[in-house]
Length: 408
Ligand code: ZN
Ligand code: ZN
Image (cartoon, rainbow, N blue to C red; front, top):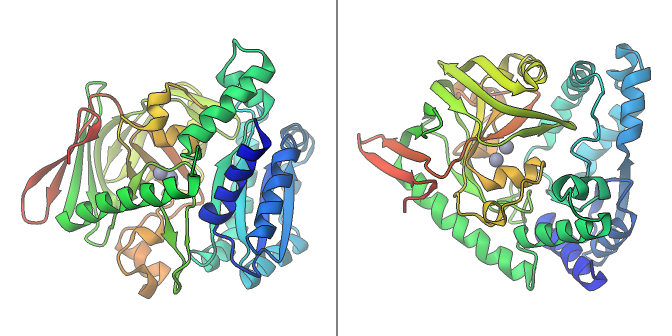
């Protein structure tokens, strides 16, 4: 990909994604396969005013070795200095940028149970610190193509062609072509118009129906509010886009009200493994049955992470007619695939989806029915014939989606 185009993309991530502030520290998380792009991104962060930019590299083959050779006790341990490091993050609130480029099959063959158990324990130790930083720092997840990922998406192309094609697909679906910053201003406005309308309806329940067998009713809290596009930092007017791309308008449901059956419409790529053709049965909000043609054991091990993993934390609305779906590409990466279709997430519900969250305590919101878990896993359920009807507090039925797309 041309350097000038990559520079514009890096600028979009630094300024519209993380919206790096003058004098702020920035941390970038990336795979070892992206040295050139990360160098450009670091420079764009400095140009945006960053005081210091650090990069944490990871490398999937090393992760595989660690999982294989470390005892569970070692693999799940959080060292003193790691605590000091995250405490420093709580104090300094750096902006975080994650550049995803992993091979979707890069962790094939690892002991998934061991890995998800140990990373679950580690997440549990970090969670109180993460909660303290919630809505107080900017973050952005975006992508860059590695060779292995590109070959997975375009298996019939030569490697160099595949990488180029995946760059094009990433830039196109990320609305980064041409005036990326301008495109995102417009896109944020459009998403805002939609969630403001949804919030005006007073929705108590969403009813999902699709010919593939999905028939699910999900309750919303009186305090659930829809949002989308950019977020705003607590107590300031700093806006940032946490996901590039992002097509969704989403909210957090009532964890105790979901009944029926829901079929996934796309595979789920989780920590380097694929879960395919799966479905859930829910009762009183809880996933009481989970089946998958491929990866059922892994799916159940994620659901067994903790109690909250079996309850829903997110309902996201994405039109079937979205740039990602229209590209016809399966990215094998949730950042993209989740924006191709309506989805749910099981696990943690986001506090910012609760009306007046700024003035409520975390415990209060959990008490209300906002789900809590160490995991938050999106899975796609949108189809070309999906209909969603909202029940409102004043007893009306309002169509939200017909034939997979916005009904308004
Ligand atoms: Zn989502
Ligand atoms: Zn999500």
